[in-house]
Length: 430
Length: 174
Image (cartoon, rainbow over all chains, first blue to last red; front, side):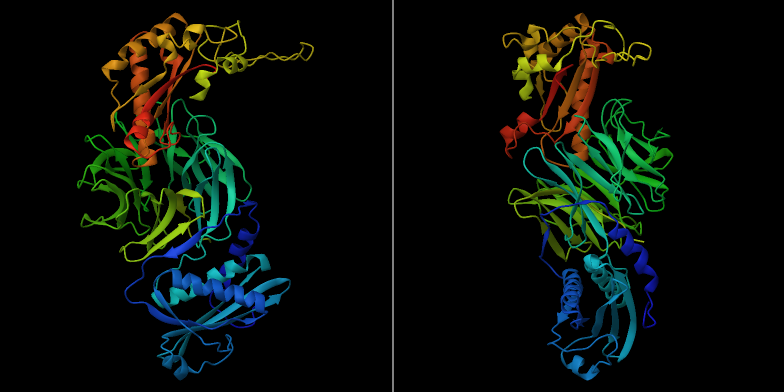
């Protein structure tokens, strides 16, 4: 069904059919994104208007452009209405004069009742093609194809994987007794409610394959851990022991979770199989041990403990044993999350009375505070490790913010009149 | 806890059960086949009265007070609450059929999960004291609501002080 030899054809079918089959109810309030910073050396790129059916072409063009622009890594060059598609040889000199280093051109057309979007990317200075890609979707999921094309362009031009086609989870609080767990595209669009409850929902954590979320729900008047399959809506209680059950974090292989249970006294970290069986205790300190997070190699766990007199971050092996303290600066360091490459830790540090997003280079132990907020919470890395999604507060309302690991690029995601919190950036869609 | 002020509502929530006042758990499910299809009603919480005894709700009785307040990032029970905890321990000792749920709460500052653990420490501290003074371990469950259910939604010292709290709830109140 592909008309031109294209390099990424394998990706599209599975991912798009998974997206289309999601049985989530639709949520109306959508996140709007405001960019409050940009990278220093942005790549000038032109995205020509896509060819084909006007409505579909415009939808794809808009998604690709806004994805690239929002990343803060690209400067969009105005294509000035130039009409070309993936099959047109571009006038390289003209695009060079407009200041573009790269040009993408494509089209969208119906194939067997679905939409096929194609794109080709050019290096303007070297006057060569950097390759092409094609993606098919249902008409309703056309935006997903746009995100895939933006990921293709991003990867070709930056050398790292794009995350435009990933999804995020977050909780919206509407009034005193309505909590909604939403799943949205990484750009905040296409939001769907996976769970609606009268009681709080916190600590959402994506399974590594992106099909399930673990979270803590208070619907039984106490914290209980659930695993929720997004496509079917099927929920399984995996920890409802006496006392509190909280802070789920998936192991990288998706087989088990690290959780915090108070059943044995104090708050202790345990591992538990994804079906709720095989509970094993890891920590033995009598104080607070919580917020476990697996290192990407699956061999060690980072967590928060007050064993030294103030909340600090520690590390231990997945089978317990030796515990090393990781944070030393300041009197309140919590919520450790490790980057996908295992080199960086994002965490929340209290500085000058404010709770701020910080990163630590784990090799050098160098710490950089990335924000000047007063109420940052719940960091999670994008799957390519470039951005960190956090909850923060603006004008008394909860908003989400995505901050680049160097602190230069900041995007704010908010819902008009809504209180948004507890974000979690999902994995790559396979 | 709004419900504490509405004994009539409490009475509605509580159903009598006289068979197993001293069982550790709610009575085990009963096989009702061969019994004309009748179903045995099992009531969780082992209540043996149709409502809470008046001493738990009479505003003049110390037992009507259910909240213990804590300092910032602290979980030790301040001396001014010792009599209150002792009174509830005495009640639980004299009424073994009653169960209690202690909900620990924190103010909104800091990590939600760390606050959940801190609220647990507060609830555990109250439970420990109750057990020390005679309540049975299996009469009392301590859980945490962390910062999720603030009594006062304000963002100031007075609101935060109100939210750093442990609430003692009896069977039928949770």
